[in-house]
Length: 240
Ligand SMILES: [Zn+2]
Image (tube, rainbow, N blue to C red; front, top):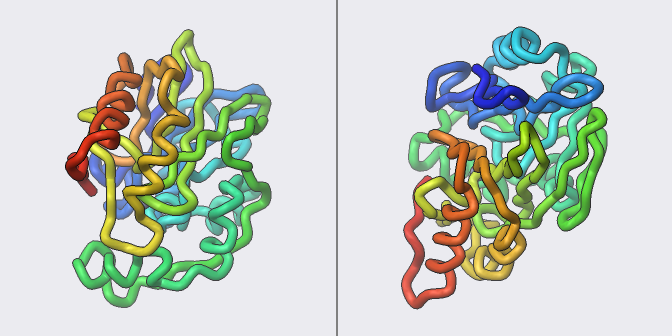
């Protein structure tokens, strides 16, 4: 479903648009075909692609925000269909050989977020994106902002669409200013404190979140709220 002229939501477990284990998956129009943000969990890649084709056509590539299974495990299916996967540099060791504990899966199984027989499929991305640089995918330029804290490899992608500064924030910050700190390896409040500045002063309009509802206007307010909470004495409000 289209959220702006050039951005569509093509996968979401929360909305039951696709597999329940899928994060929000977005398609952004680009010169060579839409590019996707995150792959979903890999349980329903065909519906994901159908939704992409129906809105903007065959995808030219996919960028992942971090290696957690619900954001990355559609990767092998997409690669098999000829769609290149771009991952942040620090995601590569996790994608290729991360243990269940490093990937947060041990904890997710313990809490029944994933079934006990769930297996993470390791794979090698086709390209990597360097945090705090810019990248061109499918003819669209995106800024790669390092925003660790939810996960050690987490980035956000910023790009201009339809006159808006759009930020694909993954699981880092939610519209109400909450962060997503996990009790798993790789999640760190100190990393959040260090990196939130990378998103301050960016004039973000649309904040496209990895779960729940995105925010199409005044997204910078959500970031600024998180930054303010991270500067304070108490643990900021956090959700999963
Ligand atoms: Zn995550």
